Each structure stands twice: as C-alpha cells, then as structure tokens.
Image (cartoon, rainbow, N blue to C red; front, side, top):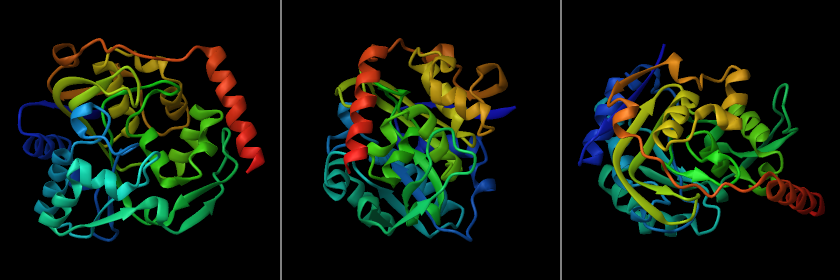
Length: 292
C-alpha cells in the first residue's frame, strides 16, 4: 500500500521534516538531478490568507534535503496573477532561499520546451519550463478547493510550469492528467498549516496546522481532498490519473501514517461552479486559445 503521512503540530519546518521522514522521501530523491521545490503562488498574497504556500513548509523541505546531502535545490514557480518574485517576497521565500543558499527561479521567464504527451486524453502538445523537465519535482501546494478542478493540490500545482496557462483550462481534468504524465512530482507535500476554503483565491483562511506528504502525488491529493471533506472519487482528475496508472485515489488503498483522517478532517465550504458555468468558461477558454 502507498503511504501518506499526516502530521499535526505548531512548528511547520519540523512537521515537514517529520512527514518526509515518515514516508522515506530520501529513498526516491537522487543527487544526480536538480531538485525543484514547486510551491503554489497563484498571486502575491501572504500564506496566512489560505491562498499561497507557507514558506516555513518550503523551509522544512529544504532542511530535509540538506540533511540528506542534496544541495542542488531550486525553488521555482510561475505565478498566474502576479510577479513571481514579488510573490516569493510576500511569502518570505526570498529569506528562506538566502538562509539556505538555494536558487529561486521564475518559471514564467524560463526557457520553454514543446512536449507532445504520449497517448493523451486531451492535451496534444504543451510548452513546459525547461527547469521542470530537467529536475526531480517536489510539489508543495496549499490545502484548498478549486472552482473548476475540485481541488488544487500537488497535481494541479504543475500548471505553474506551463505557458500559456490558459491552454490547460479547456477540458481541464484531462489536460491536467496529460501534463502530470510528463512532469509527475516525485514527492508531494501539502501545506495545510493555514488552509483556504471556498475556492483557490477566496482568502477564507482555515487553521488546520497540518502537513500531508507522500511519494504518490495522486494518493496525497486524495488524502488532502478527504481532509477537506471532499470525496476523492468526486475529483475527476484524480480518477483519471488513477486510470492512467499515475497513482491511487482510493483511500482504502492508502496507509495513513500519523494522524488519522477522521481526527483532523473538517468540512470545507466550497464554491464549485455549476456544470453549465464550467461549460461556458471552457468554451470561452477554447475561443481565446484559438485566437492566440
């Protein structure tokens, strides 16, 4: 059974290290390739809003890597609605990077490589940041729901490595799975310190004091969904990812280490859009993509 750790506490750095230790993350990480720590900075809001990744969780990931003598570390993101380096500054990532002597990269300004997925569900080709293609990825998203995708966790976090990001929104679930089949995170760490309910940018903060980690990003996202009171099987891209052999989204096939889901679970308020609105948005997105 795949293992996912749930750690509850008050010191995010130590909680993150503990969660990564519990799932033996060092075993799957190589010193032969750079390690890309990929947070979620959709905008330049402070992590206390429940929108962006807590820099203390990022610091815990870096601390764990350094403890295992992995020194070629990059913190990289391509923000959707802000200057990436401004988002880093607001979240305190710049201070973490300076303290641990690691590089920061704006993936929006990276060199992009066009990739054609094998046996795609919907994505015929995609431009991906070269740094993401050449690195081992640790996805570090925020714990929060998403209006279109259901949840925005370690898999959806990979959209930050794509240009243009709008090219993924039409037929979103299928295209997410195609994208992850190219740049699948080797480790997933969900920042559930201050989570966000409502939707991806609502700013409705929920104090959870959790870190969730594992080596199967589909399973980690399934556990993250369950912790928010969202049935994993209701999240289309998780079901499709399992069908494509990228991981498991069935809780009965996941061994939970640390805190049981039932002990930490909260029913998050969600702002899921109706199927009609989603269809309208998808049609508009497709129209924009065709024009550009």
